[in-house]
Amino acid sequence: MCPARTGRSESRGSASLSWCFAELEDWLASEDAAGLQHGELEEALDVRGRELLRRLFQDRLDLTAAREERRHDVTGPDGVVRTRAEKGRTRPLVTRFGQVTVSRMAYRSPGRSNVHLLDAALNLPEEKHSHGLRKLAAVEAARGSIEAAGGAVARATGVRIGKRQLEELARRAAAHVEAFYLQRVIDPVPEAWPLVLTFDGKGIVMLPDALRPATAKAAAAAQGKLATRLSPGEKNGRKRMAELACVYDAAPVPRTPGEVISTPAQKRRKKKAQAGKPSGKGKPREPQARGKWLTASVTDDIPAVIAAAFDEAERRDPQHKREWAVLVDGNNTQIETVTAEAARRGITVTVVIDFIHVLEYLWVRHEARLFRMEVKDRPFPCRRSGGVKLEAA
Image (cartoon, one colour):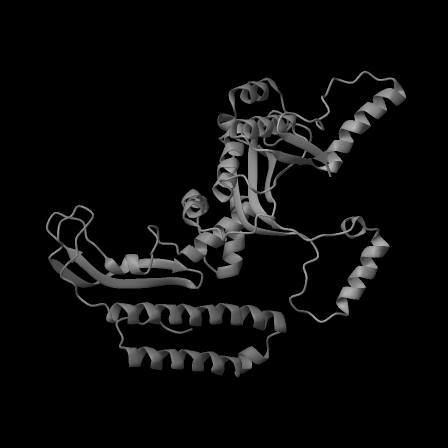
């Protein structure tokens, strides 16, 4: 392994890295490496190569610190000038390759907090884990449990992060989503392009103290079969609905019904024909979503999330010159809220309901007539109301 080194010059850093890489080459040529199976060799190279990347990262940080110039106009957030400067103030930074040390100049004043200009220049996080690890933690946490996310991060990087730290990293990764969307500039599109809004709901199993009052009351009254976990069918009354929304510009692509819906045999023939064509940028086969805007909330209700999506849509089309399309899955609350929101803003929108969900309404009524069953009244969602046109697709 390459030994840790600090306080070296640029030439010494280059020489030490050359030596570190040469050591890796020597190990690959050794008898120890020759006796390894390919899987063992792959795993060992992953660990040793990660250390080499860590050293490269450390050398770049040391070079940046060596080139930092003293300034005399540094003030803190309190407006007080920091008249003193001290080199070599360090802080740890845990990266995807391992832990490194960031050395920088501290600007000081008696009784005041230190100011580190290099922290801002490098965009260092407040915690010791890098943004790369934060991103990886957020991606893995969204796939499953925090414990599983920690295992995935350790396998990918060799860095082990505590459960509580992983939770904080995942939270911080989503802290500035609203600010990001507000400052993002959406490129203008032709007025002929439809503006699409889509809404959906997702039930999330919550801890008892995080449930809404009515759901919490139902959960308290229910008795589970097991003391440590919920059995199949017992999640009812344990969930809280999250509302999801998406807004995007749809680049239209005219298609025939056969191109939209085709049989498996037609799909195989189409795939085979496309495989024989040279790859490259050609005509897209389906409408393309451009400039996506996404939001989701487990605390805000359906009207609040839908209103936020309409705000984003009006930001893109303030004069209401484009065709607005809303895609939902048949949720009556969503449809009623969309209808009310469109009427309040004076917008005509076309609501497209997922065909599978529409088919469910039809099947319930067909089953009731066929077997002479009594079915609880469920209003069929395909209706026309005010400035809203509802269609099934």
